[in-house]
Image 1 (cartoon, protein in one colour):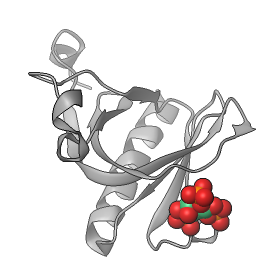
Image 2: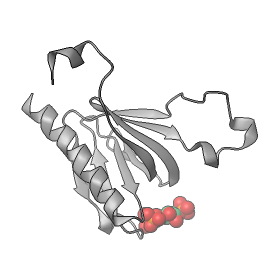
Image 3: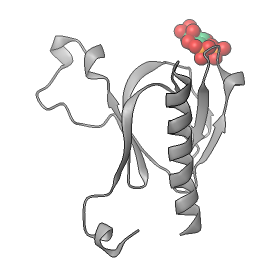
Image 4: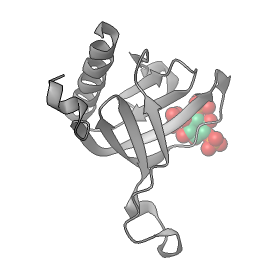
Length: 128
Ligand code: I3P
């Protein structure tokens, strides 16, 4: 990273809508609960927001920018995981803390781009 970026807002790598489900917490398996999520790749983190469109009026708040959760990509592992779902284009992200997420899109090009971009961030962190 350039010297300047250490003092500025971390670089926004990518953002978009993906289907997401958490499948493990600290290595403990969880029941799937797929939902559409607004996913933002920024700096060393993947940040998940609830899809505003899927929210009921009562759950909506002005400037609803509170992340649902955030994943540290340092030491994370990424694998295509079409064997783990009946859906197509699924990959699994596993964090060092043993949290596991499946991410999915029906659009082949879109999910390939996400995989490539997340992997490049993981690779960059591995080299640091
Ligand atoms: C799950 C739900 C998920 C499905 C999962 C089911 O049932 O249908 O969508 O995962 O399959 O168990 P429930 O809603 O009753 O929890 P996929 O869509 O990824 O296939 P699985 O148990 O084979 O993972």
